[in-house]
Length: 506
Image (tube, rainbow, N blue to C red; front, side, top):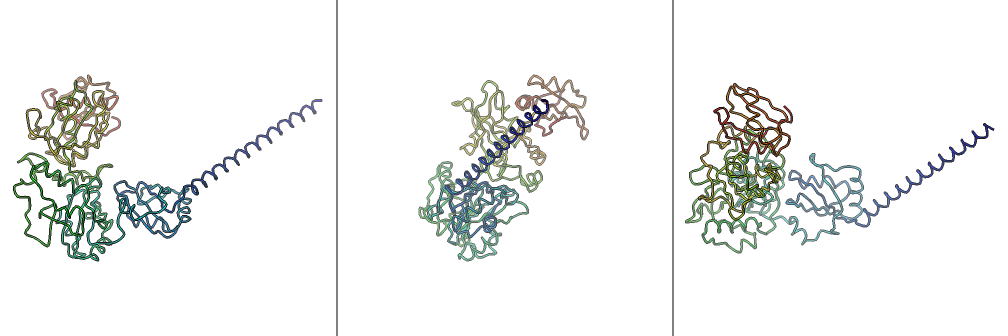
């Protein structure tokens, strides 16, 4: 009797196992079928011979993309969308494009250490009109559009002439600033010279590890930034500017009106350096105040070597910042100075009367302004998340409603600039206090800043014979509040200096 029950129990277990195995096999088969059909649907229903490539950094050249896709077939067209970090690439047929996407479904495509992402484009074919809108003309001409990436050192007309003149007679050079960065139009006497320069210099660096060249043939259309340059010049100088309209609608011949650091006509050396009656470009401070763009390149190079912090281009030329969403009950000019002076010298600050939670901050130069915008955008201060953007105003007009800091000895970058650049970062939970009195105690440091938040840890130490301290708060907002309120205050008879520390723990 017991033997019969045992056999029945084994039979039930075996039946259960067979059902489970069949169910698992069926589910696996369904999953595989769905996966295959989905992949097939994606490849076939949306297939195109045009491939859309994303995350194409400025260091990636046309040749890099060609080398990546040439193993899958003939490439007939390539359009670089530099402003969007993207590219459109057309294969000879749809099957070649499908083969490429099938391969990269299992293999992550990488160019120069950067992951790129590919998909079929919504375009079935790249037409001439689309190339004119998005990319570059295939037909070479004698005018090159040059973009300089990772511009650690200033690039002038003379520098560009030295780089491009070995390939032929350079007739004219015009430089300008655009969202893509520092750019220039370079006109050769003959088209073969331009083609030779582009082939030889594309992707090369002017200086070791920086100032990389991205060279295209000009598309016979004036960049919008250049048109805006004339408009801004008119608005700022209030002087009527005569613009040659043929230059706006055709670039078969560059029109150069002045020979200076920004433009040069080598066929006409007698052109004036500035418009008659207009004052020379004053830089970013007032007359007599030396705040020219990138004037402290040696300090920047010493701080960052040949690699700027991620997200910093070094090409911005706007020095006035618009800060909004301020806590009007807690923020004043001095507190903004204490915060923004971490990233550069402050020229002037103005709280806007018509918008009480807005303020303008004029930095020493465009590079310092870029650091401030990059590191402070979205930072929390007095319960508000800061909006930090570039202002449309080139500078702040001196007046009773603005606060001048040009001659302030609290501007950090007048000395030890390289060290201060190196310490630039977003707000952290840790603040660093320096220029403390030699007999200061940890308790005195805590008492000085504890009203601004919960303190997790403190350390007083001596370095190079000078007392310093680290204070760790519970969050970044509390640390930022302590910094803006207590920087440049007196502790034991000494005016202390506070900055954010990049240390994670004490």
